[in-house]
Length: 447
Image (cartoon, rainbow, N blue to C red; front, side):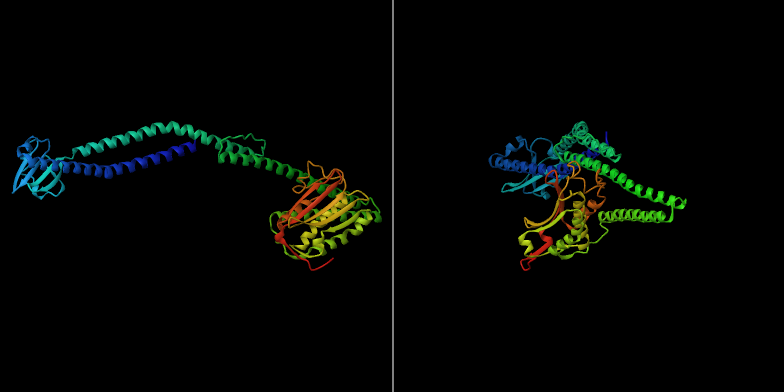
């Protein structure tokens, strides 16, 4: 018997025991009281019958199947079957109340009822032994119910306990496998309740963890590769310089290459630290309202010369309603600049020569959408949903490093939504959306 089944049996036993105890108390107090009242009611009826008989013929009292006495003028006249005359000397019937009891010389408890009439006080009584016998029967019935419930409960609890615990034990087994990084779990529970919902959640979690685990391995592999290449260059150049195998001019050139690779490593380390801080929410954004139109124009100015060198046309398109307004966005200008810088830089990197890069700012469903669209070779569909979560490495271009992962964290911390689409096989769109509660604008300024 598993632990949960034992608990079910224990709780059931506690409940049924409590019910039986309460039933014992109720039967002792309530049932006995009800039964005694019913007996007093019967005695009252008997006393009224005796009175009716007395109105007819006194002699009939001796032939009645009712035990009692008639008290008239201090004379006690017993009636009914039995030797009641022997009681009369030890019992003071005159002091009995309307509903009372007395003990006979044989220690037998008798219930009595006194009816005052014009013919005298009629006292009828009967033994209380019936009450004790009645309660004994009730107690025996309750005990039988208790034992029967236990006999029936044990196999039923074991049966239903297994039905209840087997899915839980399955969930426990699967959780253990997931903890060992075995994400290929078989978990198809059909219980029609919260356990089935939990199983589906656990199955979904396993898929997510498998994806995250794979991305983490790729991340470490790619980071290791990007560390290894500059370190190898630094070592080779340093060894050549130390061994005196190169002249002064070559040594100077090697030193410049070493500095360049060190800067590259330093940038990589800073990006890793930045991503770690953003994901750990260790950075507080310096939020303030910035003029969005001026902000976008400034970004275009920064990249115009670079685009001109690569024969790429960079354009900025702003919806008329926004371009004719002062639009202020609640954001950290430095971090938001980094996002746009990364988007535009990637667009330039992946654009074909003579292509176009469009920066579009539009108002859609009361939200502002900023999109960077470039003509290139697009992003493979099998990885487009993962580029925000991993160290994306491209076989042809060499990769875009940690840029998009950092952008993802910056945009999430701002409360902006974001995404990437292939509008066609050669057109890629990166965008983020600013919700209506994070910007304000009025038609007061023209650009």
